[in-house]
Image 1 (cartoon, rainbow, N blue to C red):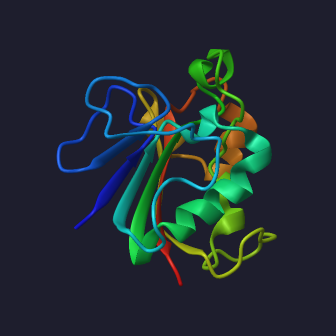
Image 2: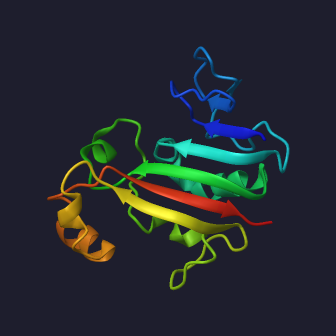
Image 3: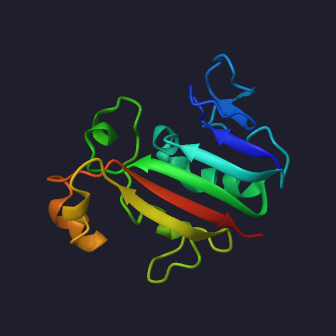
Length: 169
């Protein structure tokens, strides 16, 4: 089972191929993550992690990035994406964060979610999506996600959004 940890930074995973831009100790493959294609063959990976990396990449290339994240895994592979929620201070204040993400940002690439314009069709289904909080989780859960993001997200900021995608080929 081959697994890829994209933009690993110092979060090296044993048993995974750790991919990053920086030539740090333990990084298996060094590659500029804004340069596509990535140095892997088609249909290579069973699982891919993108933990707090996509917000650092060129937002004009996000559709191309997800096409690449579709090319390199096998059919049925799971891709886990974690990004900071737009309401958290770090999302807006980190020098290298180029894009803010809301709960429904990645809906445009998931076939199995109705009611939204699709930018990629036939690439992914969403398996799981959750918004994470440090504090005030119980208060925030009293609202629908849409009301939370529109009305109280800056009073009770979320920390991150986690999405699991299943690759379709």
